[in-house]
Length: 299
Ligand SMILES: Cc1cc2nc3c(=O)[nH]c(=O)nc-3n(C[C@H](O)[C@H](O)[C@H](O)COP(=O)(O)OP(=O)(O)OC[C@H]3O[C@@H](n4cnc5c(N)ncnc54)[C@H](O)[C@@H]3O)c2cc1C
Image (cartoon, rainbow, N blue to C red; front, side, top):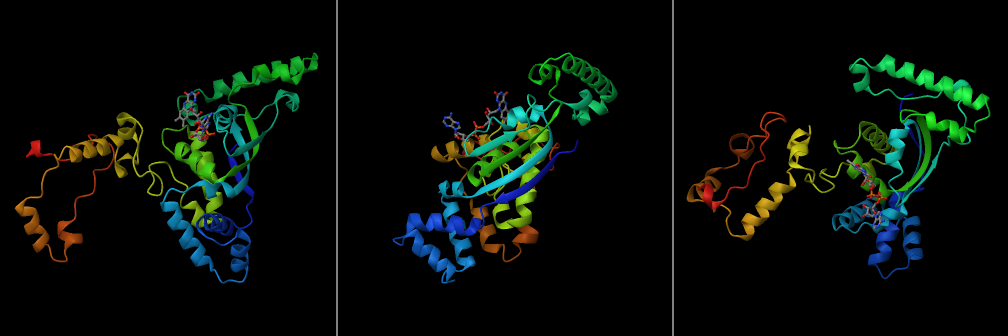
């Protein structure tokens, strides 16, 4: 089964909801008055959007809890679902039961990962699942309850969810699960959630990024080896670089600007984009060493 994510429902007007929450915090006006001013268009949508974006920059995030999204998610494996339900704050799940839903004729839908197929084990895996399905059915026919026969069912078995998640938690989930360190199925589900929100609310979807995104932390906090292996790692600094820069700056060890630098500043004219621009970082895989901040010692 293919993974399928659909946005079923959401806070009716997330922009209004976010604005009223933020304004209530920062204004002498009552939320009732704020709502009335929005209704009478004394406050425009552009003003609301601008205000929300400015507040988000400050890190004031609790109003994001006021916006919720309802998703249907199907065709995911139990391997995925074990990870999904570890998220517990700001998200509510309903998952297909293996106690109350017995698989008919022992046939359970499942996922065979691409790596398994590429390694030539796809058919063997399917044969194993067929045998498990037959045994499952034998047990059901013999009166074993589905809740016990399911002990045969593998991690690959598919399951379905209906979930409600608030925007703050969705951002957090995507911080972790759009990261290339996350399991591929979770990355696909998170990507589809993002795409679904983007179709209706592009102004909100732009914040749904992996944690290294420009709207999130802007740097990678994973291990250096993981950062080096990440296909988008080169677009973001690694935390080690930030710490090194901070330490070097604190110790007063950053290389001072030289006369030549000031001369360049004076003479560079308007040609920064063509003549003076730094070369973009090498594509991932070529240069794997993190650029280290220049210190006095390096002359
Ligand atoms: C790449 C990756 C690998 C992982 N590997 C493993 C693994 O090998 N084994 C394993 O068991 N798990 C693993 N996990 C799961 C991970 O440890 C978390 O359980 C999971 O990501 C849920 O995230 P969360 O704790 O932020 O929960 P959420 O419910 O999403 O919590 C949101 C935030 O609320 C706060 N919060 C949540 N719960 C509490 C609490 N009890 N007390 C105080 N504050 C709280 C935290 O700030 C948290 O970040 C992995 C996750 C990832 C992304």
